[in-house]
Image (cartoon, rainbow, N blue to C red; front, side, top):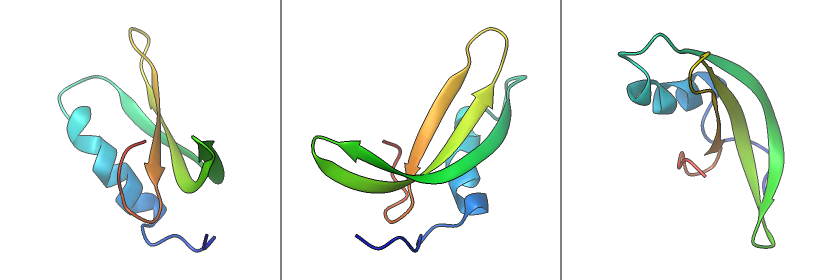
Length: 68
């Protein structure tokens, strides 16, 4: 697994943005890390959608751009 991301921090936030464009939520980039899912490592961007009502933490695969 390459530790060099194909998608940048900004691109990862842009992937999440459509889910929160009409809410009072703001997005906060946290970090790039390795996440293990079903014994398969993924390089992911961690992004928090900060809201008092319904906070979320997203992981965007840094190689595919998919939300994990």
